[in-house]
Length: 270
Length: 295
Image (tube, one colour):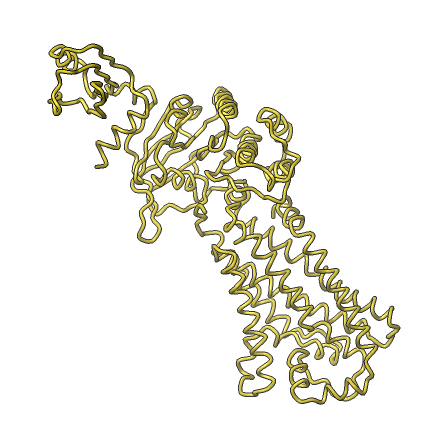
């Protein structure tokens, strides 16, 4: 790994990284205030609407049954579309800007003329991107901690949410593997972004639709959302290691494919 | 001893052949000019040498190492300036030079500062605010700052004003005086003529001529200008070896190839106001090669 390139990648995206973390914390705190201000009975009514129930279940990985305790509701923030959108945008933005973005802009000529091997370029950029993961996970968990303190919802179990944050990191790892793999294979940044967002859209759609049509259950295993399910973690008080394994292996396969292509591809002049 | 050795190099992109059967050697300590029009294959050859492209056939070796398989080891000892220098717009000039210095393991900062002064570059500004000329200066500085053994420069004077071009020529002359090698691509023949001691001419992916700049000039090519040739008919017969480039207001210009005796014998049969036989410029050389081999 080349330290100069690792630091450059972080420095290039520092505003986006810090801004993303800040947005996540802010949203989580606001979300907890919203939960706190809603009457529990109102929440129960919403959760008993069949399509809302199915939608939430598909995102949470398990049905929200019985009393809607605050900890369960707080878990929802870990799968809220706004949080997912911020994280996905951050991963794809850095992942594509650092590899295919260099090719697209033509700056790869400078980078690849330095005495840094292609593998080292790929690993340095990957390490920088992965290093943002813990920051985002801590921001998510920290946002809940701040919101819990501000709203006085002391029954939110932070230890369970730490496990959710840990599993969220492996979703992040999968997204990084995909973003870097696709980025290494493309020559145009827009194409790489379109592919990555296409995969996310597919995963989200399949995951949601499978909650409405059980016939799609089999297909939903191809969605990375299937291997997240924060509510399952809270219920079991444990990380879902099988899902962690699937996410890590899938991310690693895509990452390795990207590395192999990046090592052997041409960098034609733009 | 040759720094660069290329044998039967070929490169194609699907159906498009960019290079075919290119062979050339660049001696250590030389200033080697790689001449050709846009699209001739100059940049492709240079990009293969630094490992940006993989050759489709043949071999390219730099410092005796394989240009593709051992490119990282090669790049420790060379610097490359791309034909269209794209830099990180969000960085300052100093920021970019610091990054390059760190990525190369350090040791080039003092030289970078000297070069900033030499090329009159305001390196504290963001690169995105730079003009094309300033970006080119910065790209040149990042290539020169570590005093590499081999400098591969793809059209380095593009965007530079004449003063800065001269500063670059001086830096490159100093580099070769220290035993380093410069491989320099250009389609501006005068700068190759002014700077280089070795030259290769490339056209449509093939080397059409290679040798010392002096030897190319001496290959019995002469620039010939005949004035006030009023007695010459519209289509006059010329001896074999004279290529007429133009006839205007009684002045005939052309190039002569081969021993000069037949030319002088032919000229003595004409009544001329003036005649001039001189060393050809590379422009003439270039035009002659293209006329002979292309059409």
